[in-house]
Amino acid sequence: MFKKVVWPLVSASALILALVFVFGFVTSIIISGGEADVQTETQTESPENIPEEVMPPDGASDILILGDSIGFGVGDEENLGIGERYLDLLEEDSETDTTITNSSVPGFESSQLADLIESGENRTSIAGAELIILSIGGNDLNRLNLEDNVTLAPAFEEALNIYKEDLTFILSEIRSINPDAQLAIIGLYNPYSEDDPQNARFLLDWNHETRLIVNSDAAFAYIPTYELFTYHLDAYLSPDDFHPNGMGYQVIAETLFRILNYSTN
Amino acid sequence: MIALVRNEVMKILLKKKMPLIMILLLIFVGLLSYGQNYAYERNIDQFEAESGETAFDWQGLTTQRLDELEERSQNEAIPGEVRASFDREIEQLNYFIENDINPVTPTAAKFNVSFAEQGITLFIPLLIAILAADLVSSEFSRKTIKILLTRAVPRWKVLLSKYIALLIMTTLLVFIIGITTTLVSYLFFQEWGFSEPIVTGFTLFEGTLNSDSTILIPRYQYTLLIYSLVWFVSIIVASITLLISLIVDTSASAIGILMAALIGGQFLQFFLSDWELVKYFFVTNLDLTRYLTGSYQPVEGMSLNFSILILSVWAIGSIAISFIVFNRRDVLV
Image (cartoon, rainbow over all chains, first blue to last red):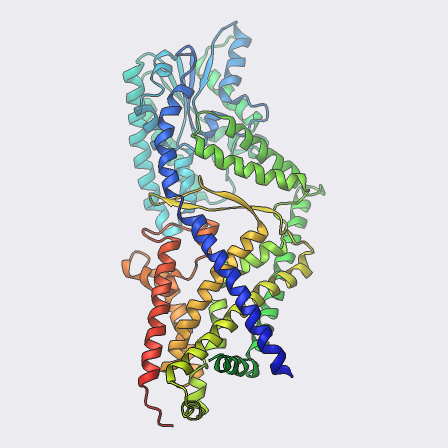
C-alpha cells in the first residue's frame, strides 16, 4: 500500500519541481549574465549628454563648488548646502548678486574629480569663478573601512598617495585655467568619533597632508571641520550618521566666511 | 528501467534517511529563526532604550533616505544609469512606506533566502551527502551488491537507476528545505513578506560590480531563483558524492571525504585567493547565490556563467568516471 502511493507521488512531484527549478535556473543566468552589452552602449552615450547638462547657462558664476556629497549638500534638511549658506552670510553683510554653480557629485573620489577637471567639462565655470570650494577625499578615506586590520595600513598609504597626487593635479589644472580665483577646501571631520582611535589618526594624517598642499598655493584656504565636529557629532550629523545636517553645514559655512571674509561685527 | 529507479527510491526511503534529514533541518531552522527573531527584538528594545522611550521610527529614517535619493535622482550631474539605480531603490522604499512594512523586519521570505545563501556552501551539501554517501558503498558493505549484479540487467543500468533515484530525492530535498525554512520561520516572525520587492541582477563590468542593470522583482520570484541555484548546486554535489561513494567501501569514509573537500575548499579559498588554480575547484564555485545578491567581492574571471561551467564539468566528469569504475570493478564479496 505504502509503496504504491509513494512512488507516483515522489516521481511526479520530483518531475514538476525539476521543471520549475530548471526554469528558475535559466532565468537567473539570463538576469545576471547577458546585460553586459547593454551596459557598453549606455556608457558610450553618457559622455555626450553630461557636458551640456553641467554647463551653467551663462557660462560662469561667481562661486563654484566641486567635489563629493558634502559639497553637494547631502543631509541638509533645507537643501542649502555650504554654498547657499555661505551666500546668505555674505548677503547679511552687503548686497551681492553672487551666483552659485554646484557641480558636486555625491560619491566622488579624488581621482574622479581629477578626471572630471581634466575632461574640460567645467572649464568655463572654473575660468569664470571668483571662489572655488572643493570638498573631496572623504570617499577615498571612507572606502578603507572595508579593509581588515592587516591590509589597512598599506591601503591607507596607497590611498593617501593617490589623493595627494590627485589634489596636486586638481590644483595645478584649476590654476592653469584660472590663476586668480580664491580656492577653499573643506577638511575632513570624523563621523565615527567613538570608534577606533587608529581611524582618527589616519584622518588627522590625511588632513595634515591636505594642509601641506593647500599651503603651497597663495590663495588656497583650508577650512577645518575636525575640531568643529568632534564634540558635537550628535548635533551636527544628519540621521545617516555620516553627512552633516543643516546645522553642520551652517557651521562649516560660518567658518568659511570667517576665514575668507573680514567682518566688522 | 523505471522499475529499477522505483526500487532505488524505495531503498532510500526505507533507510529512514529523510526523517533524519528532516529532524536536522527542523532543529537548525528552528534555532536560527528563533535566534534571529530574538536578536531583532532585542535590537529594537535597545534602540528604544537609548533614544529615550520613543518608538523605533523606521518611517522617518526611510523617508529621509527616500528624499535624499529623490534629490539625487534629479541631479543632472549624475550619469543617467546611476540615477536609474536610484529610481529602483526609490521604488523599493516607496513600497515599504505605502504598505507600512518596516524594511528590516525579519520575514519568512527573507529567512528562507538567507538560509539558502548561508547553507549553500556547507550545510546543504552535507545533507545531500547524508542522502548520497551510502548509495553504492552500502551495497558493498552489506554485501547485497552480488545479488544486485547477478540480475539480468547491465551494470550501467543499475548505476543509472541509482543516479536517477538520487536526483529525484535531491530535488525533493531542496523543495523540503525551502518549505521547512519558510514555514518554521513564519511561526516565529508571523510575517510572509513574499510580495516585497527586492533588487537583483547585478552584473560585472570591467571587474567591478555594476548595479546599473539591476531590476526589481517580488520576493517570491527571487526565492524561486535562489532555490533553483541551490537545486543546481545540490545536483552537482550529489553527482560528486556518487563517485566518492563508489570508490570507497564505507559510507562513513564517503561522508568524511566530502566534508574534507568542502571544508578544505573553503580554506583554500580563504588562504590562496590569489592563486589562479583555486577558482577551478568545485567548492570555490558552490556559492552561486552571491551572484544574484551582488554581495561579493568580484574575483577576476569569476562570474555566474563561469561557476556553472566549472561545476558542470566536475559533475559530468564524476558521472563519467563513476560509470567507468562501476563497469570495470571486480566484485569479490
